Image (cartoon, rainbow over all chains, first blue to last red; front, top):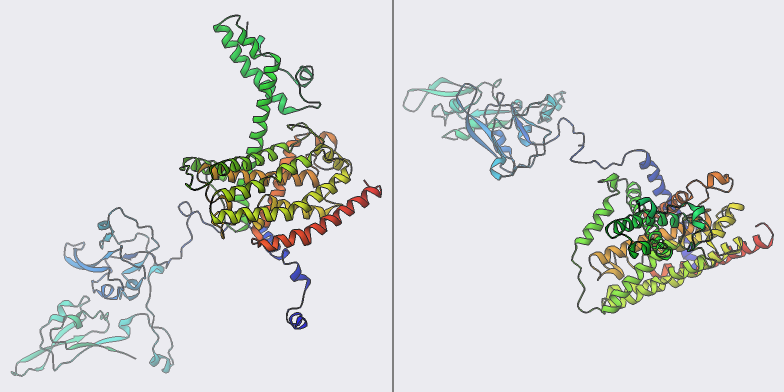
Length: 246
Length: 391
């Protein structure tokens, strides 16, 4: 029995000197840290280096925003709300307002933003005395030193592209998906033209309706369309849907 | 009479003629205490004399026995303050060094973190001084005083140099070891008196582990005494200065004594009596506020005394090295002794940072089966070296 145990765990000198091993490893670390600084960072006085695409609070470039509301729908914590604010010319436009008390800093708003108006910023010290001050309006969300690296791109690779021998990533959802109208259902109410933030919808006369009068149907310009789905949401007859290109 | 007439400021050669001078050799602490009393007491005597001319109080204040009494009080205060400051430095050293061992910074606020101990002491002062209802009041209070008192006594009885001591006596290390070994007894009684199972287990462990490490420690002291031919602390240091540091012929004894003194000071690999991860705070569980703060101070005083003893026994004490000239050795020997003590304390911190706490059976095994035989072998080496005429 004893022999079996010794065969399994042979007695080595190194194991008898078990005290020396931790002593050696700690003195190695000590001799390193005695020369260089410890890894601890004095937080309020010195801060860690942050990459440009650090996902801090969301930032908004007011003029680039088209008010499409994709960020509001993409937000997992529902902290973004579209509110009406005057722009530089005094016109009322829809822009996102962020409630930072609920924001999870996930960066999805910046990722899904079709025009890259929404960015991530390296700001993370956002304490306020009152909860109401945590509602950041569109103007306050502006971040001075926005760099191109702060944009977050939503990159997609399509199987059809790979099959066609073109495996490059597409970086916009609207390059991938297109709105399609069911012309039989459309009543030509022009609402899609009104809600489209980029003016990608034009109404043209095409055919006649049941009463024999000429009918208007929307035509989507794929160059301008950002696939924000506003027309899909607002269509009274549910005749527009997004067709995903595979 | 002018102020100058009341102050008899003296250097050492004058002091030797002082009828009540208590020492045979130069004691710089007594000299400082004497002169300090001459300045302060002379000032008070002068003020009283100005207010009430030709009174008896002023002359009595500056008479020989009274000057001697207050000079000795000053001596005790100065020695305690120096040791106390040394202990605070070692506390700070432990915090910073442990931080570096763990790749962090340790304390930082106030003179690079040195004043943290002041803040801690202030905090324990502010705490409520509670006493549990069911404790044995006498055992609870007296053992605490005795543990702290013996710790302070041991730390202060170890001289910092041949001119910085309280009393020069031939029993030297024997008396120090005897006082040192008293604390576990008080810890046992205290653990019992607190009426708490954790404190009782802590006290039992202190007593158990004490009997295992005390014997190799004493045998090692005996081996040193054989080589040096005396138990006198100054004699041991002088003998090392004549030959060599005793760590060279008795490396075995150094390791044994170092391990045992870690256990004696209840430092981390052997802090069975406290063991805060098993027994709340060990034998100190029921002590609140400043009582606990003083226990911590006592612990570090014991650690400081252990380090000073290792330095005196094995590292040449207050002499820089045997081959250094006497003039260089005479330059601030107190600082040399303190630095050597802090170096040994660094070794203790290193051991603390590296090793986990041993079990109670492991320390008994270590004490009886490893350290005691090694100490006896070391004693044999000492006898051989002494009888062989090498020392």
